[in-house]
Amino acid sequence: TSRPLYALLFLLPLVVIYELGTLWINTDQVANALIQKRVVTFIWLFNLGRWTGIPRSLVWAFPGFMVIVILLCWHLASRRPWRVRPVWLGWMALESVIFTAPLLLLNTAIGSSTRAAATASGTQSYLAHLVTSIGAGIYEELIFRFILFGLIVMVMENVLKVKHSGAVILAVFVSAALFAAHHYVGIDSLNLEPFSLDGFIFRTLAGIYFALIFSCRGYGVTAGTHAAYNVILITLWP
Image (cartoon, rainbow, N blue to C red; front, side, top):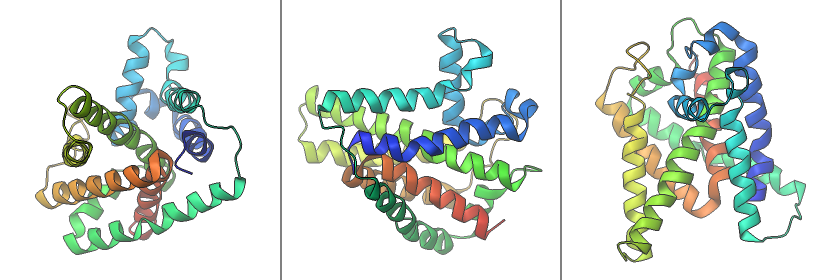
């Protein structure tokens, strides 16, 4: 189930929910990126789509389209069979929920400010939180684990001739630190989250945890775990 085809089929419903949800919640807010500031990686991909010349009316679908194309290309390159056992998709969902337990315990141990950071965003509705929580799982894991983690390992092994174990260890820590730091970067000066040390430490540790899941279970379960954690968090601490 770590194969890209399983990741694609597992995440496709979440991609559709996120893409349609951002448009359905409040079109004006989406157009002004007020909701999306909570998922900065989505805006990065959105701006990439605009830079390539995609019309504004279609560019909102570009990030989700990228996820689908990347996973399809990865599957084709792997030359693995197209056979799928649907029951395994259910196991992936169960894994994702189970893997949230250490994160919830860690969040509780570190303190309440990380919980507040995850749920506070002015007057946004629970549904807006729900949609952006799903988006964070998909697009943050795409950028920081699937792309960044993989690039670091590839450069370290093929260019710098570092052993695989050393390359993976470096990729785990670098991707985790950058993942934590990016939460304090906005598109402009509005809606920036104030920096807090406990929040940064928690997110760095969470990034390490996600990187370990990615190494063992692949992108699909990692993104599912991230999304499930966010959804549980905003539900338990509204």
